[in-house]
Image (cartoon, rainbow, N blue to C red; front, side, top):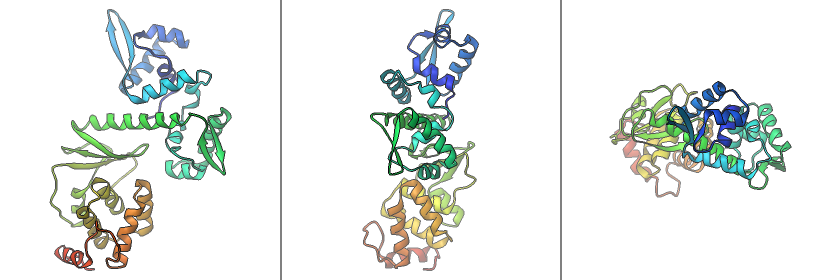
Length: 307
């Protein structure tokens, strides 16, 4: 979720019961300009409005992102956060969950290094971040900027999911993507079915549960086998689902480098490495969540997969 400067300005000062006129006076903007900004914030679920006679009062929502942001503004009133947090700033902050280099942030956010450098210079000039051996990290308690960015992204994902599924659970999320469990089918732009139902595309039919699983991504065309393997482990990392992944990796030609890249994205490096070593060594991995090699051979034979 990207917020415009005017939206950040409103969130910084709005208190329960402020009218559009009062906000316009405080921020020295026209009422029509403020009204449009408030309307956008209402649509994003960050404020709501109440009628008080002929006046419309603006109320901050109970979203944790709003609380985090207003706490920052109150505690550091000398810093003009609306000026700092526009453009790619929130995306960069999202990936500063730990000390990272410019290259690491660029890779994770899929942005140019020059873009990341510009944003970080802005933060460094204000004393919000510093560097240790080429790794950027927050100074003092400014790590709460990451908390704000994370809560804002989560709020956006929850809103998007609730718009298409009455009961849904987010299992994993990134800045602009998330994996969700739903009780009903989702047929909406950006939602890509994954999980056990997706295995059928690769001629592997499994008994399905009552839940459906979807990856939301505006950039994805189709869920690849590598992504499907990772999603399956995020859904359930037990022995049965690991066996399903082994069947998929045995049945479909999956590029190992791409699989490891996907594993890094989802924080599953160790799990994917264990699956690959299991197949390479014919079961020579000490992990009770993986089947005995003879058991897996029988399972593969049932699905007409040669090992």
